[in-house]
Image 1 (cartoon, one colour):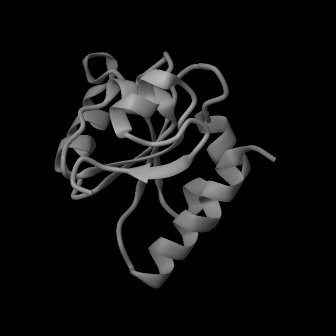
Image 2 (cartoon, rainbow, N blue to C red):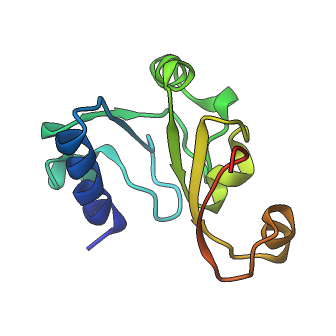
Amino acid sequence: AGEIVFDRLLIEYLSEEYNIKITVAVKSKPALNDALIGDARFIKLDRIVDVIESGSVTAGTNLDKTNAKFNKIYKEADIVFAKGQGNFETLPQNNKTFFLLMVKCVHLALATKLDYGEIVLWSKSL
């Protein structure tokens, strides 16, 4: 099973338990092992939350390369959870963005003051 299956469990819990609006953004074309709209539909994620394509077709999420719908939702979001080192390296580090990732290189370990191989939820605000 892909990570998106486990993501769905957390997303389902948060949306039901806390009655919050969640939008999940997936890649528009294959990039490494990132989830696509077909993956989200396959696990029926689109039946519990809004699922959109980001417009991004590379590792990470370069906001200059994302579509208007994604940009609008991203800017209006109260909290952003971004998974993976690619997103850590490309998205702005601000007080509303939380990165869930594994520290996979020395550069990231130095930037976050975390240990190589550590799995972490990191934010500028923490």
